[in-house]
Length: 266
Image 1 (cartoon, helix red, strand yellow):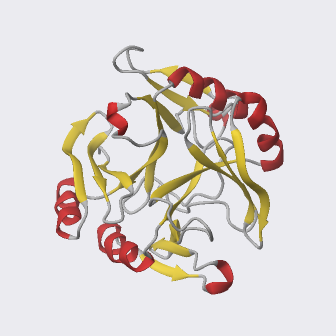
Image 2: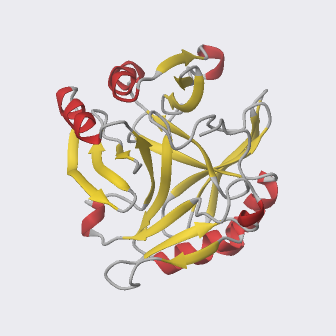
């Protein structure tokens, strides 16, 4: 797949891991996803780029000052050409801005918010950094989805922000899953394909956690990756299973952050 050079509004474009122990995160993800790391140093809060074949695909960062007790989690950023305009729509749509918008010197402009179901998400307006340069290949993100207990509220909120076309691909009952496409996708390099999805889950399936955006990373062999997870201190939450979209395995890293590993079909 060619390098990514841009992302349409509403498409997940970047992920970073809030990690209370950066060294432990590097030790786990480096071998698992064949990553190298580039630490920006103290002037940039030790923000650490994760590189695959020399190209940025994700990042690690310590918790912000005052948030040292925050749990480890993967944060998902949705692309926008005008972060201020999107943030202005969030309260009316039922969400809550919590940080920004503010500039990241030399990189772009960002904000963070909560949707009405309690899931946090980031917004990214590109400057020097437009997002992950690889997508859908080993060591890179291959999908993002929102896991929430209120699918209807989530669909309404994110449609108000980005105008997604939202297609129910489940039965709307026990399996309630909508795939989200960006407007004009058929005329873009993304084609008429979903850029992310929304999965309705039960309180029990959240295991006491909050609704959250999830991240899938592609790997060459998900069964071998699952064995590597357990051998390096992580936990397999659901063993590898086949699906029409690839062979998948939900795991938790040693710091407590959840993610899904996937060997894509073909």
